[in-house]
Length: 336
Ligand code: SF4
Image (tube, rainbow, N blue to C red; front, side, top):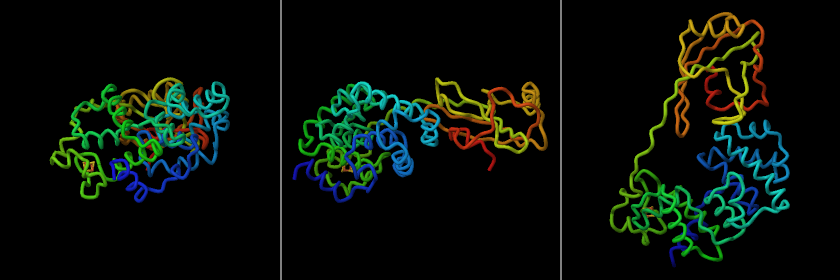
């Protein structure tokens, strides 16, 4: 058996049963691929099922209200992915007469769809000969070929994509892509811990044969994560839900709701003057505690003040309601 045959037959016998693998509907595959970016498979499943139930097709997604969309996405992070989904759905209706584009070239014109996602949809849903190259595939490739190049380089990725397309089986490109990704997720694991003894393509693997598996992919320096200090206020009026205000549309977590905050750590004395400058008075004990939230490129180091307040409601502040999407970074600040 050749490399592709061995890989695909292993995949067919060992793949995880995931809801988006039971369909070739491009809409379903698209939604799952966008959700899976930066998020674990097990975390995505319930979000995916709920999303597809509520928004089963492109017209439903194009028509959904922004707040409801954000609510469906709440907890997945990277909210720009959700707004891009809606923009792309509108684009499919207006530019492609509602017909889901099938070529990589057309898919790449849609907001939020990059080379990996375009190739995944084109190959899995439409059987197009496009290699989908994600982090798992790059890791597997670097070990198979003892490829020490910088895998973050766009030109290197392009060359790897081309090389994979030369071995992609014409009758089964989607299965091949899914199999490469599954191999990376289940067997050829990151951090120098692949399970080579269970690998279906070990006999084709350069690094395994040469005993150099731990050298690939080549280590590279990770950019440092920026640490940002913040003070977050959990304020309840007459024991109602905590007060929230709307974030600006642009930037991180744009358009979502948040607890009021300040971009540095402040003392309890400064907190009291903050309340008074907003026409509020503390009622009862002030709780103070620390919380942390980690994004890909930054870490929020939060000091939280939590107290009941009286006074008049500041403009633009409202008690948090069920339908208001609140990012996990803020939700985490609620007292335990
Ligand atoms: Fe990865 Fe080991 Fe398989 Fe090579 S033999 S592809 S290193 S799991």
